[in-house]
Image 1 (cartoon, rainbow, N blue to C red):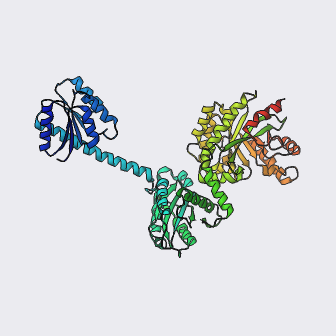
Image 2 (image 1 turned 90 degrees about the horizontal axis):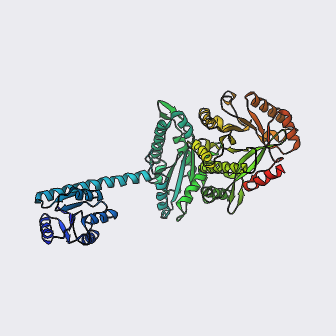
Image 3 (image 1 turned 30 degrees about the vertical axis):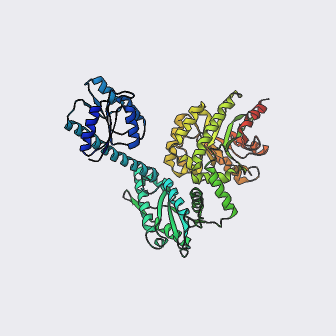
Length: 575
């Protein structure tokens, strides 16, 4: 045996005999006359096992066990207590403190050696199990459980390593992102299990493509899963002769081939982004954010979904890239603001509520247009966090209005496409209601026509959940999409909102007037009320009222205003 033992024993003869016996058996032995000195020996030599008498001066065996178990370095060191009395209470106290076993003195040589061997074997097994647990935890922390590829966190480490070493052959570090653009739709059709199989097959396909011509000439590639619907390839030595767009087209064609899952072929929609001319010393997080931006540009292409982002990016691209990065911190830094636009009755212009509109007060750029930052937030996924913040803020403000306004006022909140697909959306809504105390009938959720029709069964299920909560539901921008009226009548809606594009010229354009009238008639036939957006003149208001529109929203009655101005606006309406 080649193990180290510390003995704590105040009887000199017993301490000497134990040291001699265990030394003859091949153990390295350190002995002390009390628990205090034994503790110092343990900390100095990190033994494999401790043998300790119970009753000792200066520090008892029980106190020694307590000290060992409170120190992470010795918390798992086996401890065997040696006691001259067979008092069960004494033994139980030691075991409760964390002792592993006990021997009653006097004990036989074989009894002692058997006990030590059992504790050493148990400790060895615990060490192996602990090491495996650490390895498994490391794997779970750094690898995606579906594809077994490195996850985003681990890929950042690989990328940072690559960026810290300058290629010395004229080659360059290049990143590629593979967007699996219709993965969410495939998941809604197949379910979680089959879509994971589909994702695994696509990951294997990408691995095969990177190991074959022409990409194999770029050297050993690292592949990762960056997010739910994107894979990435890191090529640390991209040859100058290898055309980026040619490789992108090759990957686009290969990854777009059908995948057979659950006995059927499914055709993935793919985008490819390339980020090249990376500079040694760049931060990996910044480079990955630029890759995300390039993928967003690829997904917006009307032709082949391919985009390249390099060091020669235009100022506009650079500005967009900066916004993309800053959006990741907007919620945490408190940069978002809720603005509110009044909604009034068409007859009498009585206030009914407000639509909540998200604004971003950038620390250096000031107010950023929603038309600019909302699409970016949709693509990089930050819209889910931002939307949850907006729900909370809107409900909180609506509760504050009630303190100064006798009539209950509703607040309408828009749900984005990605937010509507978030599996935690219903929970976010319920949390906002519960934490603020806003009655559910005073919260109206708005989705666009296009969002509602993307997956009509999902829409129907989610709207039914919201209706069961007692919420009001609206279809925003109605008339701009391609609604299926057969499904529209099944949705548990309360409101249709006429898009402002039909209101702007309603007094002068016959077609717009006919369309607005048709929407109002359709809504009433389905038992829904109508809100017209973008009303800027008294003539528009009067015509919409005549056509039967119930509510009006637009600059005529109030521009979007910060939350702190709403109370004053309400007060001015009642004085």
